[in-house]
Length: 395
Image (tube, rainbow, N blue to C red; front, side, top):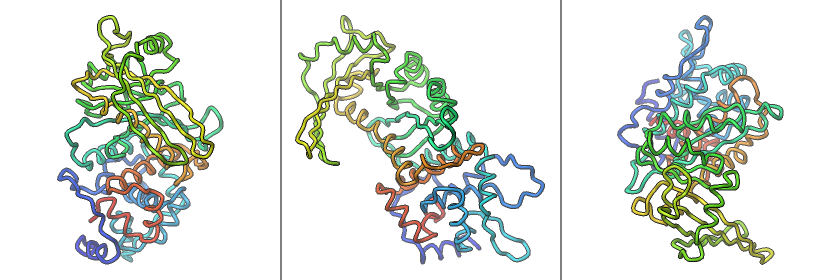
């Protein structure tokens, strides 16, 4: 089917996604996936790798949670949809035959997962809307795929997310939770971090990370500090917080509670200098939470540090960066609830990681289209096989 015919079919069968694509995004994700190397023996290969991967992404955009579900969606897809996804076409009959479940399982297990993450990350970067006047903020966090193996042998992934767009820009595999530190640089190194602020939890509040971000990548950082760094933590708790005014306060009601967050910021130079590379400001966030059901209040205090000066980032900017770090936790929550990731028992080869990549990709595509209610969008996509094509850039 020609491109004009496919466009006419889409116009009839799918609602237009109201999203303005930047000029840099002229190739669909299907075309971009051609950069993923095919490591299969070319003898006997029927289904092109690009078509299989694109079909898997489209199926996950419709809510598919497993290789079996991906194959079922593909088998039900109309010929026009399969054509748009680049599925193999029988030269004798002209009929496009969707890959079966075993084909999907073999390819998901054997594909080069690093190349797949890199290819999709580059495409997402080119597809993002232009940044506004503020700095971009990237969040780094890890997640264990609990169903991917027995205790101690589970797949653990470290990802980086753009807080502004909610899109995943990269992901790397680690051999265990304690090895996240060694994967921090490989995750972020391919990205241009000039002027970007990187947020991370207390595990990554490391001197080496701070030096590398500041000196090599010309980036900012906002790191939380807990008792795993006892000397630094003691320094922060000893600062004269009672004399420092609250510089940002927000309140939020939802999920049966009411939260009040108060932020204090102090410049740490001279006698207040912190024993941490390039740290020039310290933050204290006090969160008071009212449980609306019980009427009881609770208080949590969090400390953080940054290499950004008061002129480079206002208290409101820092508060937004810290609150925004939860966006990557939201990503993990969506994967667990909408895709039941932790109950998945895919364990062969790279399949667990690749399925996580497909989920990241689907969520990123929906967010690029301005969609925030992911579960509702997946149900909507499942009712019309043409809708995922638009999100893939086939318009």
